[in-house]
Structure formats: C-alpha cells, structure tokens
Image (cartoon, rainbow, N blue to C red; front, side):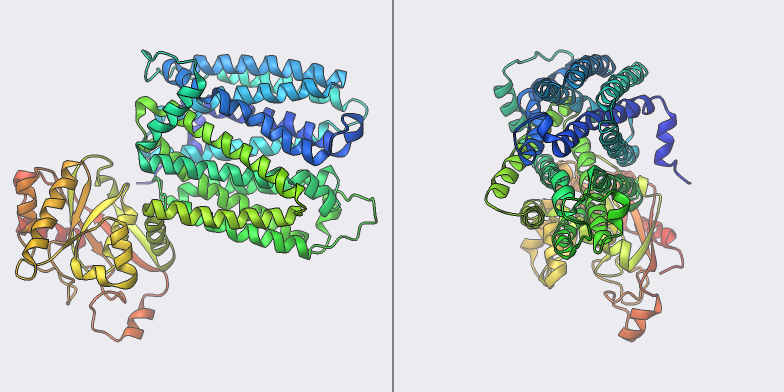
Length: 632
C-alpha cells in the first residue's frame, strides 16, 4: 500500500499552521540579521568604527547568548503550558522586538539594532523547545522523520528567503532602511496570524513548578539528559553541527567580499546554495531512510561534511578572479570566474550532507527521550547548541586573529569534524553499524520489505528467520525500526569485519552444548535478560547456514527461550540471498558475483506474531517457509 507523501502534512491543520509559524519566524530572523550583517560589511564606516569581521562574528554570538541564559526556563515553560497559547505569546513578543528594531533602522542607531538581535535570540530560545516537542505530540512515529524533514526544509528555505530579501532590501537607496523596518514588522504579524491557527496541544507536565534559577536548572536539564546515553550523545552531535555551521557561515560575508571579490549579491549566492543544500538533504532523508528514524544517515552526513569542507579549502586556493583591484563582482559575473562552480558545488554538498546529519538526530532525540521531559531535553540541547556556537565564534575570532585565512579556517573545521565524528561513533557504535547496514542495502542490494510494520516499535519479542548468508543479520537490522539483539554462532565473531559489526551491535554469541555448554547457557541467560528489558531478540533456529538453499529443521532452542520469557514470536523470511557471495552456495564464485548484478534484489517478509503458548519449532518452520515461498 502506498504511503502518503511527507508534503501531505502541509494540508493538515495539525501541521500546517505550526509549519508556517516556524517558517515565518526563521524568515524574519534572517531578514533582520542578514540586513544588519550586509550593512556592516559593505557600509561599515557610516555605522561603526569596529572591524567588519569582528562585528559579523559578534552578531551571531549575541543572537545565541539567550540560549545559554534562558533555555532551561524555556524548556520548563514548554512542558508546563499548552503549546499553542505559548506560541502566540512568543509571536506577540516578536512583533514588539521588530518594532524596536524598526526604530533602530530609521534612527540609524546600531546598538538599538544589536539589542533587537538579543531580543530575537530570546524569541527563538522560547520557541525552540515548543517547536521540537510539538512534532512528536502531533505526528505518528512513521511521520516523524518526514515531518522533521519538511520542518528543516522549511526552516532553511525561510532562512534563504530571509537572507536574500534582507540583503536586497537594505541596500535599496534611498529607502532601504525603511523598507527593511516595514518588512520585518509585517512578517512578524503574519507569523502571529499563523500561530492563532495552531491546534490545542496539551501540556505534558502541567503540575511542574518553574525554577527561575537558570544556572541550576540548566545543569539539571543536562544531567537528566545524560542518563539516556544515546539521547545525550545525539544532543552533542546536534550541537556539533551548529558549531560547524556557525563557524563556516559566519565567514561568508568577508569570504565573499575579500576572497571572491564579490558584492553583497555574492554573499547572498553562497547562502542561497547552502540553504538549498540543507533543504534538499532534509527532504531526501525520508526517502533514504524508508520513513523510519534511520541513524545510519548520520555517519553518511558526517563523512560528507568533512570531504566537501576539505575540498572547499582546495577550491578556494584554485579560484581566480578577473576583477580589477577594488571592484566587486555581482553574483552572475562571479559565476563566470574560474573555479567558482567548484566552490558552489562544495557549499551545496556541505548543506546537503548537513541535512543528512541533522534530521535523523532530531528525530532520534524526539523518539527516545522521556515524553514527559521532551521540552526540557530540547532546552538542554539548545543550551549545548548555544555553548558550541559561542565557542565557534570565539574560535573563529582567535584563529583569524592568529593570521589564519578564511579558507584555512574551512579546512580546520572540516578536519575537526572528522575527529569529532570518530569520537562520537566510537562512543555510540550503533550509529556506525546502522550506517554499514544502510550502505549495504542501498548500494549492493535493493531490499523490499513486506509487512515490516509487524516488527514492534516497542516492547519485547523474539524474531525468527531462515539463515541464508553471513549478512542476514545486517539486512534484518537495516529493515527494523529499532536495534535488535541477534543470537549468532560464536565462530562468526572471529571473522575480521563481520565480527566487529556483530560485537558492536551487542549480538549474543552461542555455541552447541557439546562444544561449550557454559557459553550456551550464558546465551540463554543473556536472551532472557534482553527480553526482560523490553528488547527485540532475533534467532536463526536452523542453527547454521543452509547449504542447499532449503530451510533446515528448526531446533528446540526457541521453545527453551519462550519457556523462560513469555513474549510473542514473529516469523520472518529472507528471499533472494541464496547465491550471495557470503552464502554457502557451491557455484563458481565469479559466476555468483555477477549473476544478479550490483543491485541484486532481496526481500524480507514479516509474518503475524505468534502467541507464546502457540509456539512450536515445526509450526514456526512452516510459517517461515510459507512466507519465503519458492524464491530462495
């Protein structure tokens, strides 16, 4: 059955008003901030005597300062109060802030505008926990990755449009400042109208007592999130993305002017390409993940951020401009310069792989954190984001002050990303394991799932499947909505790559009783413990790989498992793996390698759950055989 496209959410009241409120907020933030950065970069002397590079790094720092100070309070408010009413309050605040900014524009008062930057930071701080707690409250689990993708796409399209319009309006003579003031107030008003259409969203913890000690509450929020290791490390990964983005994006105005010899249109071009990249990457996440939260995309995104960040450095070295000294080219003239298309491609890819990196992390945090604490978890993440972004601004100021060029800063950022990625994925190897599984089924094979929704998204269950090849567990794991504890022959753990993968996936080694009775009994104890903790356990009841392609008799181990743990058993069948290079097919190796082609077709069929009292090895074998059919 075909599933609705993620864009269908835009027709539904539970999502559309929220989307437009978020979109217009992101649009207005950047309509204002970009206009301020452009006027400081290209008309600095009429506003300030400070260095344009210093101010353009200072403005983002001041914008995110409220995240450090007020995120803990914002998270409590979002958990305590109904979300649509809180959103309307935040939007009224935005209207007031934009009126203050309007006065700053028309009176040519820089510090009033900088005060409005801090005010918009407060606005975004208050709305952040509401935004990401609203989605899991209104969307089902299979809509979450698509909803996050559309939201991130809308956010970055809003950012793009705000940046373009802000850069264009503010330089219009002689009324650019008046146009900018009017536009920001108008957009704030439109966001307020959209907020009044957001449906009622009950508070998850209305009895919560607000603590106004933001330092103590910030520490409590972060300490609470640390109890869930995967969620906390996902928060750190999210914060690292904002560090990377802040470090790179803050350099674009001066990079466009001093290195590319472009005017403000060149700056807008870079932001446009980057935003299109993030938006397209965010939307592609649903297609690449198969509508589930696929954290295997996170390492994929991280690899791209490093590869194209490094190439941006080399592309910058290879760029040459024909512009005369003191002349700044517009966007169209700049695209005709030697090496510019490579720079634009790198910026696009950095944005796209950033989308692959960030969307699954958001969805994972929303899915795995305590629903009663989701807004405060998001608030804790915002605190970390803010600290990382402040650190990014500080690092940029220090490194540039030490004489590094902006292209060299891009290179340092990309290399730091590689080190951080290795560190995070070593702490949570589930990310890397899921990436290898995702890579296998999206490059070497085309995997079709039949009734995969029968694999439970929560609660304990035993999965049983026919055993065809050494990659059976990887294919099954990639199709499942959450981690699976596989029970594997202990000898497979001695294989170089596969052994590492299965140890990383916390597979349970087992041996025949005549070979190692202690290891066999330990395996049953580990299985019982995993089921007691609500995990999924998968076993291959044949006990060994098939040598003929046919399904061997199921051994009695499944009955022993169910005798200890009364959980449902879900039969499954793999189809199309017989003849794989890692199966025991005796045909010629080269013939097997090329018979099915690079993108060979596989299928995983999932049957109806079997109640524990009805489980027998023979019945399960029959069910698996029926699911598999004639296709081996």
